[in-house]
Length: 200
Ligand code: GLU
Image (tube, rainbow, N blue to C red):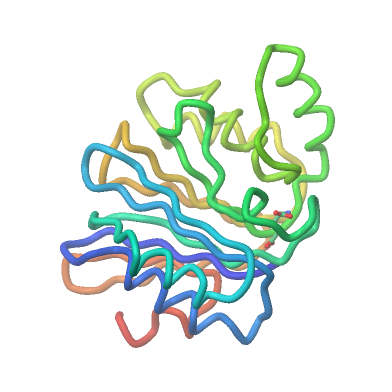
């Protein structure tokens, strides 16, 4: 169970997400990633290894946008790799999730989704959540997430964003830690206080 970050506000999200994830490095991790929305498109960058690899990717190919989510992963389902790193998206690429913890019943959920023709791009338990939220989506990300997590068992924290509703982030906490921080005209999410205390 590792690091989660989220940001909505007037500033560029990517540097704030990476800064927060860096402050959570003490928890250990095997890969890192962000999804940032510029108001139209959701862009995901992720990489196995140290946060510096993710920062290098972002330096080489920056992502603009003032809302986003970030993650440092400690693998439980699927080996550490670029494609198992979070965020995970639904097949449209318009809904992205980061997840800490374990979805205990992910296998029957995945089998049901596969039977319906879903194509998975990772071995994680987390990716089923992106598919389930997309399946439940009828114009309201909060309602879709609520319906999706009603089917999930386990202890977890989950943060969801979508280019269909720019500037909106939905967060779920089931036993696992997740905190909300308020700044001036901006909101932060993190799996632990040190990530965002200086901003709030
Ligand atoms: N179970 C998820 C995975 O293996 C999340 C692990 C975590 O908490 O970092 O990808």
